[in-house]
Image (cartoon, rainbow, N blue to C red):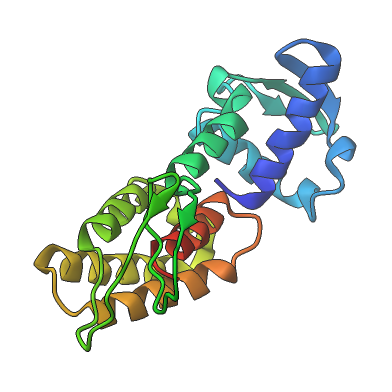
Length: 207
């Protein structure tokens, strides 16, 4: 979904909360905090219809008056988006280390776990956990353009490269480098729950 469409929907849901009804009549001037909203209003409504957030009966008149009919998809949009973010984010965990530990490796999904590690010349990586992480991200492939914009293709390419190496369980140093690239791409994206989930997930993998 477009960013301006999300903001438009957010304002609509605010009005719904005040009015207590799913059918909303209002003026386009009430959405002026969205840049160029008068010019983009039709495109925004079309986008919301395509995403199933408002019904096809929703319309805007020449006078600037809007008749909007919210759907369950629209009403639950931000809650569902938050749930997707929670699925992407790895569960926080507590790690207890005893003695001098170097090259610390966080263990995901285990609370109060104790892990010892012998550092050798061979670089290691938990391929299974990285594979699980990549699988979760791939579930939201259709949302990458909305979340990352023109970076979506590069993000998708990194995910594909990581997945290929993880499946073969080879070149852990290259996998780590690609994960760092993916993390850096995600850090540069503001207001994206998926990008935030990727950053936090990678932190918990090994960084």
